[in-house]
Structures are given as C-alpha cells and as structure tokens.
Image (tube, rainbow, N blue to C red; front, side, top):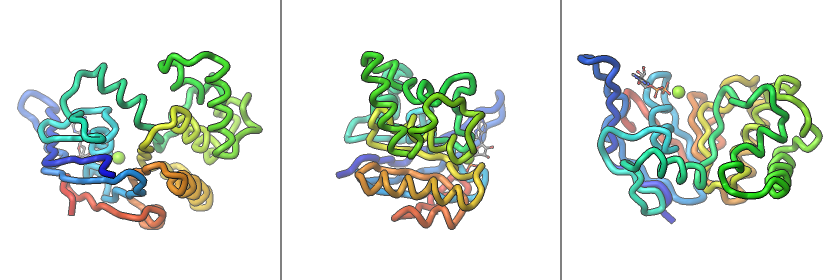
Length: 222
Ligand SMILES: Nc1ncnc2c1ncn2[C@@H]1O[C@H](COP(=O)(O)OP(=O)(O)O)[C@@H](O)[C@H]1O
Ligand SMILES: [Mg+2]
C-alpha cells in the first residue's frame, strides 16, 4: 500500500533578504507501507531537509506530499504536529534524550500529548524499552548509559506511540561500527515486524540494511 508520495517537491531556504538556497529540486518519491528505505548522499546533499519534510517537521516551498492519501504539504503547524505525533517516530544522530530525566520518563514523554493515563503510559514505555533490550535501565539517566544504549532508548521513545513510520537521520553517526550494527539489527527487526523504516545515512555499510536505496545529490534524486 502506498504510504508516502512526494511529487515535485522543492525546498528553498531564504537565509537573508537577497540570499536563497535551493536545497531540494523536484523530488518525486513513493514509499510503500512496510518498506525499509535508505536515503543516501554526501553531506549537504539535502538528506536532512528531505527528512524534515517527510517527518512533517518542515514544509516544502512547493510540490505535493501525500501521506496515506492525505495531502499534508501545506497544513497548519497544529495539524502537522497532530499527524506527526500519531504517525511518525524519529531517531536522530544525537539521541536527543532529556538528561535530567530517567530513561523510563524519556520514553513515556511522547504519550503525554495522547490523552492516555499515567499507568498505561508506563506500561507502553516499559514494553517499548523491552523491545530494544533496555528493561534493566528504566531508572537510569541517559548520561549513565553508553551511546548504543542511549540510541536504543531513543528508538524506544520513537516506538512508544506505535507509529507507522520510523524516520532515522544518521542514527549510527555517533556510534562505533559494532554498536552501529547492533542498532541496525534493531531497525531490521522492527521492519520485519511491519514498521516502515526510512533511514538516512552516508555510510554504505549502514545503507545495506535497507531493502532499497535512494541516492540524493545536490538536492536531486539521482
Ligand atoms: N535552515 C537552513 N537555511 C539555509 N540553508 C540551509 C538550511 N538548512 C540546510 N541548509 C542548506 O541546505 C543544504 C542541504 O542541507 P541538509 O539537508 O542538512 O543536508 P544533509 O543532511 O544531506 O547534510 C546544505 O547546503 C545546507 O547548508
Ligand atoms: Mg543531515
């Protein structure tokens, strides 16, 4: 089933009054539900810009984006946030965990906006942490964990709302090779369980975990 459909997406950043930069040029792309796609390209090629648009964190300057058939390219911030919360989980290179907060509380956080009670939030967070093998670290703070464990906690946080899509932007960029492979095994397992994974990387060895690779260069799909 068609999940993501971009057609002729352009993104122009206006850095100052007379300075513009076109970061995406006529991007058209379809992704089916259940796919595991790697988006590859050198630094500065537009990967994160594309991820921000796919993840409804930013809007394209022009073009159409349909998510499950619904036009989502030009919605209000509020509606974008609602769809994002429901359908998309994010994993970033820098983990982005709250350092003064326990791992369990970090993972329950995305559920606070969902109107579910505290007990159910904790149950769901524990389940997500179990899926990534972190059940013994619930009460630890992020800075008490290794990089790989922190990234696993971030994956649990992305999973806890049960989104259809996981968007991961250079998720192994701060990890050593072996730990990076362990993280990629988690994404592989999640994909086998039916999650759609969109992975951004510039490393060939990491892109190999995906079933399809899309190459971006100078803001264009090549
Ligand atoms: N907010 C912004 N304002 C102006 N230019 C930007 C902004 N964000 C990214 N860019 C530029 O757009 C291009 C693509 O950036 P990015 O999507 O972050 O690339 P990648 O993730 O592939 O390294 C780069 O040339 C970058 O400098
Ligand atoms: Mg980037």
